[in-house]
Image 1 (cartoon, helix red, strand yellow):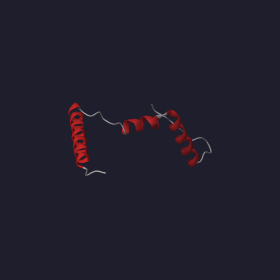
Image 2: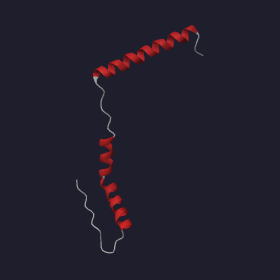
Image 3: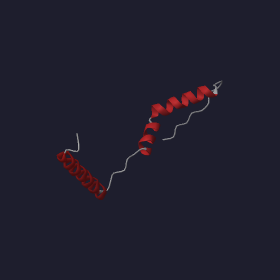
Image 4: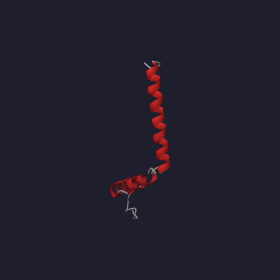
Length: 72
């Protein structure tokens, strides 16, 4: 979606930039661009499995330390 802003007669550069910024925000172009830029990619099945195993190992280790009394 193209957005075209033309300088009006006797309009200052600051006023033009302000009007342009307002139109960009109202149109939602900026919001869509940020969604695309900061989109998080889905993790693969293998990566999710490895992360789950890592969490499980850490939990087991934590419980072991807790039983030994080394953790407050």
